[in-house]
Length: 155
Image (cartoon, rainbow, N blue to C red; front, side, top):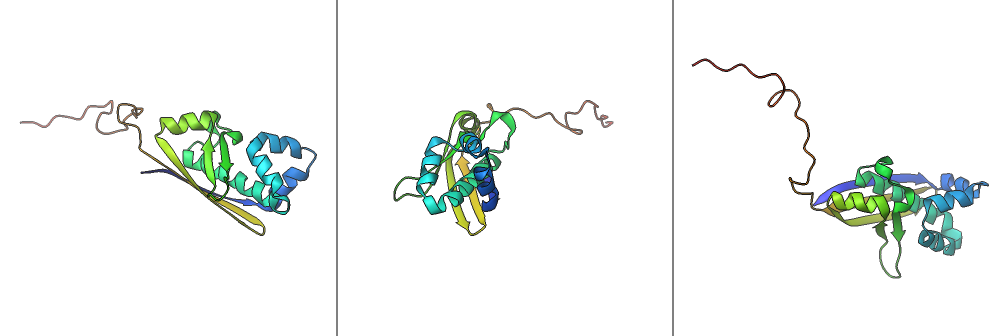
């Protein structure tokens, strides 16, 4: 069952600027895992596009998880892993992995693309939602179960 979908578009020039500024090394360390950095740096000519599409994937994954920046989720909690002759994979770490598990999200699919000035990523989270006993109960609004009792009908 699909439990979350996220998509993000990133301007490659924005990431190029962030990486070339004096704070570029700090940005790289704060946002990308060591494995992502190694992969992107090995790409040489395509390294900026590779960083940009991974940045987009992290944003899309946060949307699919349904947290954004809430609940202590960070950039390095999401990692795009590329194995030889295989499609890219999204691996969750830390707080993002714990939240995904609590929400029943067990399988993550990612699609990446970049062309010219734009990088785009699409993320889908699959799994089974938690059972009713594990869900947090919501308060009822006005109507059935509200604080004001309805009048009884006369017999």
